[in-house]
Image (cartoon, rainbow, N blue to C red; front, side):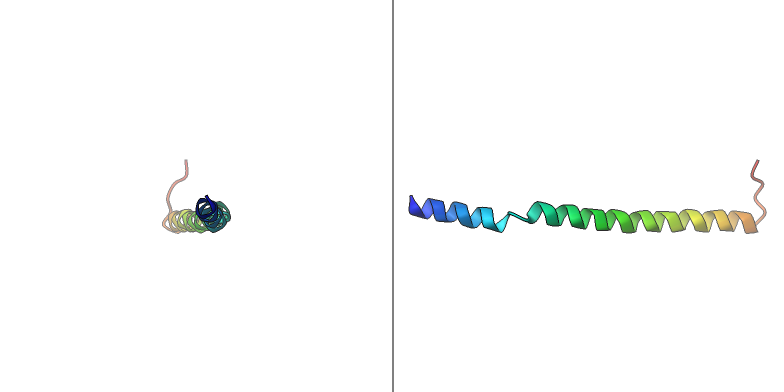
Amino acid sequence: MKTALLIKEIYLEAFRNLGHMIVKNYFKVFAWFSFILFFVVLYAFIYRVFTGFPFD
């Protein structure tokens, strides 16, 4: 029984902060992805302005 409790404690200790790390990394990736998409939209808008695209 003591071995089972030790294995349980090792398991809980190993995965205690895993959720926080996943969420933190997810938001970092999402933020970079959002910045890249924003700059693509900005580039497309500036390109259309300089090439004389009619915004009707």
